Every structure is written in structure tokens, then in C-alpha cells.
Length: 337
Image (cartoon, rainbow, N blue to C red; front, side):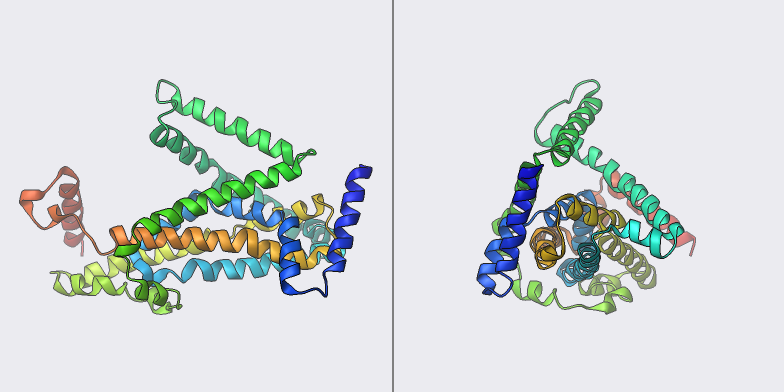
């Protein structure tokens, strides 16, 4: 315990010494001491963010590149405020809300955070199982899904145990490595297809365009106008586009992250001296990895799928069982109009 206290005291002295230092000196010092922000980044870079980015690129192309970074900026601002209050008072927001406002709000927040953990965490086992079986060819036999789930659960248990013991630094290093692997993987996909990309359209895609809440992406305009039922397709595409936008926005920062952040900061013994570090930590560990990963997924999915269709939908000679099902559903919907 005394070693931890000495280390924390040295950390606080170091932070105090760089308060008026140059920007480069601060960045160097903060980078060495960062931690909880990377935990937030690891939480948010899961199946929800992946699916949200994937379908965002499919339905909106590069026109919707601005959406997830904008939502994450709002999320980082909110988390920064929570962190500032926590480090200033030395109390968790849950404790402060119960004591100074109303226990109903505090416990409601806790219950909502627990439910969010269940909603977001359980699907990760399915995603992890698919990764082990399809990508690595492991546990494909009988009871393979159960074995995958047990392996993932055991791994997660060990990692969490490390955070609750003296292995905090090892835990944080593992998180940084995992987040880096995720970002580099998606970045590599974009690098491979770099020659096919319209970089002008990509740059333009970072400019917020709220008209996409009321009209389909530009690439669908010609298809809709040439169809025999333009109103039908306009509504279908717009409804789907809105749903994908809401999904992508909702998976940026979850309520479970707002509850976890203050506890992870207090667990490390952070105080008032760490307020600047906390904001930097969220930017470095949460925003930048999220921005790079989701942007690369949107660009890749937009390049591969946006505005493209199965030729079997138009040419009966190339029709497949899947296109026949889609055509049947389309005709049924038209009959109901």
C-alpha cells in the first residue's frame, strides 16, 4: 500500500510540475499516465460501433462520416464534465447524487447502467464466437459455441481480476494494445482500397448535413426517380437511413460508460491534480481510436456496398433464391399501399 501511495504522490508532483510547461511536455507526460480513457475506448469499440459504422456506410455512404465523430465529441464533453466533478469532489457521482439530490435518480442511473451492460456485453460473446470459429477455425465441433463462450468468459474474468489487483498497469497496457489492433486492422482495409476512393467526397463527408434526416443520400436519387414506385422507395430508404443514424449515434457513448468512468478514476487514486490529465485521457484513449476505427469502417462499407445492388433483382436470368424473396416482399408491400 505504501508503494502505491508513494507512486501516486510522485504522479501528483509530476502533474503539478507540468501545469505551466509547454504543450509537448504536457502531452508526453499525460501519455505516460493515461489509463481510464483507454478503458472507455475499449468499451465503445465493440459490436455496436462496428455494426453502426458498417450499416451507416451502406445506407449513407461517405455523406454520413460526420455523424459518429460529432456524437463522440458530445460524449467526450459529457464524460469530461463527469470526470471534472468527480476529481474535484473526490466522490463518485452516484454517491453525490444520492446525498445532495435524490436517491431515486442515483439508483435509477445505476440500474440503467447495469441493464446497458447486459444489452451491450452479451452480444459481444456472439461476435467473439464468430471471430474464433470463422476467422481462426477454432471450436467448430459439437458444443463449440459453449466452449467459445467459456474461453471468452475466462479471459474476461482474468483481465478484470488484473484491474482489481496489482496488475492495473498490465491491464491498461493490454487495453491499449487491443484498441491499437482494432484501429490498425480497419485502417489497413482503407489503405488497401486507397486507389479506389474518392478522397474529395470523403473530406466533404465530415461536414454535418442534417438534411439526411429528411431525404435519402444523394446516390439513391437516380434509382428512386427511375423506379416505378418512387414514393415507396423514398420512404423505405429514408426510414432505414434514419434508423441507422440513430443506431450509430446511440452506440457512441453508453450510460454504462458514464457510471464506470468516475469509479475507474477514483480506483487509480486520481484527484484534483489529475483533472487536466483526465480530459486528455478521454481524447487520446476514447475519441481518437473511435474516430479512426469508425471512419475506416464507414469508408470501407461505403466503397463496397453503398448504392450497389444484386443484378438478380433486375434480371430474372440472374435471379437467386434470396432475390426472389426480396421481390416477393416488395410486391406484398406494394399491394398493401
